[in-house]
Amino acid sequence: MQLILFDLDQTLLDTAMLRPMASVHDWAGVRASIDKATEYIDSNGMRSHELPTLLSNRNDVTCGIVTNSPRWYAEYLIEKFRIKISVVVTSTDCVHPKPSPEPIVRAMNIAKFVRENTVFVGDSTDDLNASIDADVRFVGAVWLNRELAGLAETLSVFESPTDFLEHVNANR
Image (cartoon, rainbow, N blue to C red; front, top):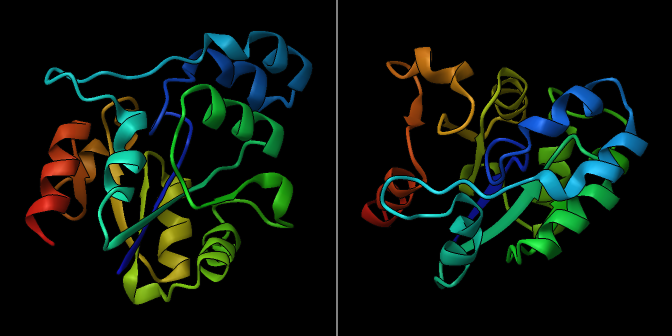
């Protein structure tokens, strides 16, 4: 069994248009604009937000979301895009958000998984640092945010949701 935790923003969904407001904690502005969040579809037709659902349909994978966004925001987008997950940990649930390992460790505890069986998929150095400090395997998702693309020689980095899904399926 494996726990695959995903970052929400710029990994499962394209929320770039909300980032300027979220970065200054303008949650009223985010709430008013939240429907501008969109799905990302790669050149093979794979929708990034469908990764947890596709993987959760397997007997050996449990999926969750770890995000620095507030719970109301995450729950709204999870419901809107029908993302199938077993656990969600948000900034609302933690004293120390990412890059602290606290949200990842909390998700592992809720899902009852150990670090050796946990993978975190994210798009930023905060995600990378949180996974390092939580001592879990990290996978870089660079299909929307290219911040980690330069680390492809030292990290597992995937250019598309299709590439990531094929990798997971090949390494069952």
